[in-house]
Image (cartoon, rainbow, N blue to C red; front, side, top):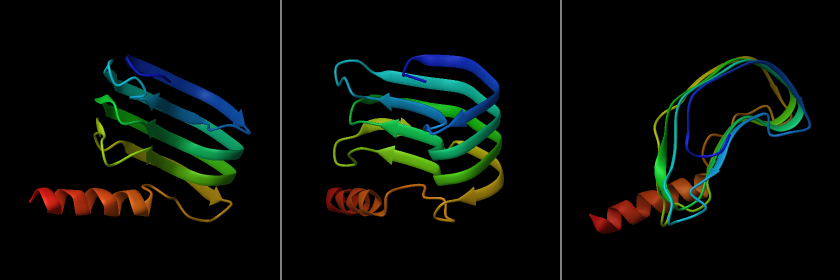
Length: 131
């Protein structure tokens, strides 16, 4: 799902070798804000995929809010939950806490990776510098 989408309900989907339920990429055009709100993904099955629930942003402006990933089943998935700000240093695109209601968590790496650790640390350090 691309930016500037709202009031979307997606149900009963089976994805194979894909990103599964994806929002983005958003914020790739710095001159145009991207907004996503009121999105509900329900009853997804993800098989042999990179991700199950994925939010991908660039350094542009806008927001992602009121997004729910519910009743997800996944097998052989690298990262069941993946939120990837491409660059924390200049991002002005806000992700409001999405709700993840996932079932049967079986991933290739047996872990859910929510934020890239290095990006989080960079953002925290930059905020400390601003003081």
